[in-house]
Length: 239
Image 1 (cartoon, helix red, strand yellow):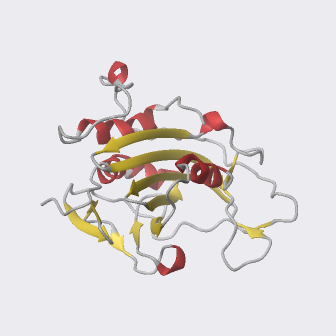
Image 2: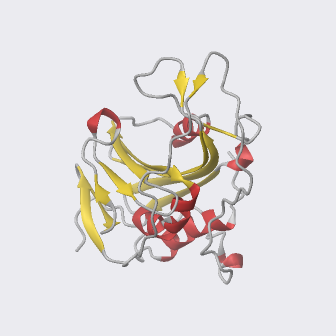
């Protein structure tokens, strides 16, 4: 899996690293010091031409979904505490809770923005011993390029961190979202200009998945708040 990071993904990880409490540590020395002075506020994903895709053999593409509730958003900077089982985290107050939005009816959140709604799905599995990169590769297979080809490894950005007792893996990818449609046999989404930013959190034999997927324009608005969110995971409540 490629380790080269775009400026947008540097923002995703750099903010998380810079705001860690002193007791937290990185597995490696911070590789982002050389770009600390750069302006990383803009999205890393800019595709001026809508891509056209070909579905995998035997899979039929759906009509791209229209933008839902596309609107400008003012980010207040205020957050609230949420939790999944024993894992606590902070989310912007603008993220609307969507119970049952995640896999198997798990919790979720809706992120509104100028490109239409994006969605954060939360799930948990007892998956000790499974490498997080295996899950990242599954997500990678859900995106294709403008020509319909699979994403190359260098088009997927991955970073690993240690936050106290938590092992956190961050992933960032973009293209045409072509994941299988749940409950629809041999059918895939066909959503151009989409982006996924995800975190895998491992703690005491449990694996938590936080996957944000949506239009790239909306994801760009929430890029830094998602970084703050990814830096807030804690196994106990921290007021």
